[in-house]
Amino acid sequence: MKENFSWPPHFVSRIQARKGFDAQAFFKALQEDAPISIRFNPLKTNAEEIQTLFENNLENVPWTETGFYLPNRPNFTLLPALHGGHFYVQEASSMLLEQAIIQTKLNQPKLTILDACAAPGGKSTHLLSLLSRDTLFVSNEVIKSRASVLHENLTKWGHSNVVITNSDPSIFGKTEGWLDAIIVDAPCSGEGLFRKDAHASEEWSVNNAQLCAQRQTRILEDLWPALKENGLLIYSTCTYNPDENENNLTRFIKNNNAESIELNLQNVWGIEIVKTESIIGYYCFPHLVKGEGFFLSVLRKKSAMSHAKLKSKKSVFTSLEKKHTYVKEWINDSSTLFQYKDQILALPIEHIPTIDFLTQHAYLISCGLMMGEIKQNKVIPSHALALSIALKENEFPFIDLEKEEALLFLRKDQFNHDAINQAENGFNLMRYHNVHLGFINKISNRYNNLYPPEWRIRMELK
Ligand code: SAM
Image 1: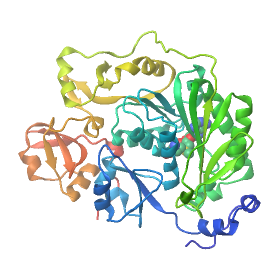
Image 2 (image 1 turned 180 degrees about the horizontal axis):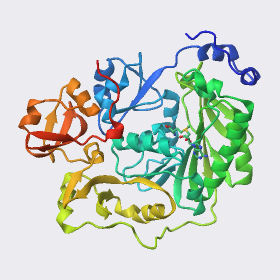
Image 3 (image 1 turned 30 degrees about the horizontal axis):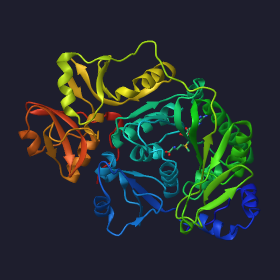
Image 4 (image 1 turned 120 degrees about the vertical axis):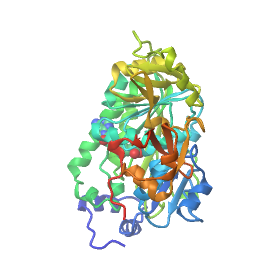
């Protein structure tokens, strides 16, 4: 239980004025510790392994197949499974997104879906686990430093049907009717994080909340043209402020030809339904739901002016030189290999026009699966390949490490290990149980650790 907490007075009076709302229970819950939860990567691990990793009898997050509450907060950095993309630390209410995806059938094959405000990657990793693997998923973050974190988290998650961009959302709406769905997890005043993050309440002001609402409207207006007819927009925030949620969407729907989509959520989950004349939205409040504050609503575009068939002038991707085609053997995936400068990329061929279009209009951070880099006529396998769900078992020799050595490897510390000493020259995949950690390049009696330096663990190991 936290003590001496004071909330901004305007926030308190707005919450107290909510009709039929138990404000006392709400503020009591805000003083309690936030629940800890994780979501696992079903293409790398399973519920049993996660139960064993933390402790048995973990409680499920009811609205998702892959979420668990943890009884306490472990030191996540010291768990190799985190660095191998086996799980992601995410607060539970946000996982409600799964219901919106499944119930609106966005998990059907071959769609094009944009997550417009994606860093650090909670929703994007979740979406990748839910969407069909032949859907093209564009994960965008406007702030450069945050886009790097997004890149790291998505690389670890290991999917190849994703393009990561670092652009203002407005660039996506400059072309009409090319997206089947857009996820807008909008920047907001963050009231839902007040108990998790004390700074969130210090930074709160009426003025800032108004600015957030204006920015959210702008993001929606900018993106809306990109949706196809019947395309879906999933809007969410982590704030309780109606002006950033249902009121904002009500205004938006008046000017745009859209309808609000109802979801079927179980009463026992405690999620509150809010309705305006045109919008139905869903709130998670911390005294009713085991999670942080969250709002979600789904809109459908009723009609679109045009349905774009994306064409590009000339692709930046060239065919793979014959001498490198052997690298296709490294993966178990229907992608086609291309070269871009000295990189070899595995890309979904049916989405090439869209990817080409993105290369011309957005700033791309990564695209499909970066298999490796060509250096002096040899292909150096990438870290993304080591962590990819497409990597074929046994294509590279494994070296199995104990936990302490796995952490030393993740720190990029040099250490002596019999299996490394005895390993063949060339690329070896470092592994801790079934967690892929990264490659080393063994060169006679030494080795290079190919773990990306910027992602290494910096914490001292005791
Ligand atoms: N979806 C993320 C997740 O689940 O991990 C969290 C997204 S966070 C709520 C909102 C994101 O919007 C932040 O990463 C922020 O940098 C980004 N953002 C800030 N200003 C923006 C703008 N004007 N347009 C689009 N995104 C913006």
